[in-house]
Image (tube, rainbow, N blue to C red; front, top):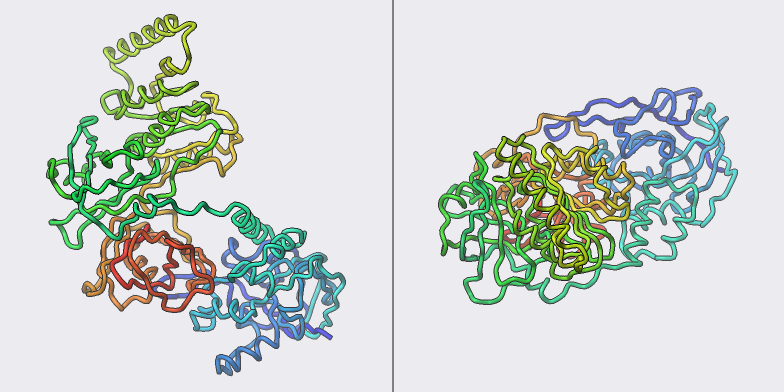
Length: 606
């Protein structure tokens, strides 16, 4: 007979951890007498991080007496008391390898349904003073599980636990946990898991993505893609420099060994390292603006007022200058298909979508193309002529230009003349082949706002590629989704670090990435390409994640032990070691920064 041994509750509190403040409800204590269990939690209980814990499908956490006994022996600890694993119910019986998703149980006046295993995160390790605990729970198949409250009511220690329904699919909590976190997944079990109605939405989405990945595996890398990824940096020579606007210049880069450069995918970027200046040498990333498959790479750089590398490129670089360049990278790339394509950019964000336009023009596919660009004025409008010429090669092309600065009288007169000439040209083109006609062009003075975007007639099945300032991409991405475009059809390129994921950590003022405190290390050089920081490795840090945090580089993580893969990051080049082997290795070319250290000089896309 299964029995409820202890009811444990605790309200969230702030806990000091590694120099930061964590808001957590992991500290639970047993209570005496009956407690009311409600739809979201137990009276007197709360969750600190509602993204990973809490809610209807994670209202009550269960852990087993048998697992307590196991850990006391395995960890050689005699201080483990009920509630130490953050559970609300400590039970005798209901082992993880027998309880199934969808099972229902009655305890006291309440009835519950099993929805998912425990979410693997760092706080259970923090509570027990054992950072690896999150990994151990999965590796030893003892995660515990969550309950949804079917019927509210009072429960108390000593209540008998009665199973009232068996879940469909016969997949245990341990089975489901292994399907998500461990290698060697059974595709049939994945599909069975998706058929269980009680499975929580978050886990259902993860399994859906795993099924999709299995049904549509990534195509193997082509030979030119492999050769594109040369290790580290190699010197490329500046062949020529072309001013595009008063603040933007294009730099054409060629190999020094006369070996052809492998073709980059349209939308990818190069990381440039500037030597001969500050130490460690600064690194910046610039999108390729050239047509894929050319004999040289073209980057187009805007000179920023306080930009160390952009100023160097504009003032010091001459034809013949050698620049250290990492191989083309990035997943903001044009997806081949037949859907309409929208290339939407602002300012220097034009560069990756211009490379995409080159590819579209060279293939001359049948899908219509929308070219939508925002610039300050005509003088600051980079690649206007180049883009117009490419669009003229595409059937059904549409061009919409927004100038944010109000026109002066001369500008207004020129705009009116341009429109008149466009009308005359349209009349002259009557009856001609549309593929040879100039693209339809509309010039608007003012900012591109969601309301004006809605009036452009973008098809609901379009693939949208969005690049520009962060606020521009955030506002327009939201507007596109609200207009009915599916989220997976909206692609955006964010220069700089991605938004952080640091569950439970109290917010602090944003700080620009910087060198870590203390004396420099003497180990391999670690370069965070998005943040433009290069740091010699020091054994003072346990992982690349800890080094990034010391530099105030925004990071993403949850378990910090190589289980959840939240921290997975592209490894641009170099070799790493794992302090503890992850339960499931990442894909080739990626690294789990929470448990990795550099074995050689490494470049990390962070």
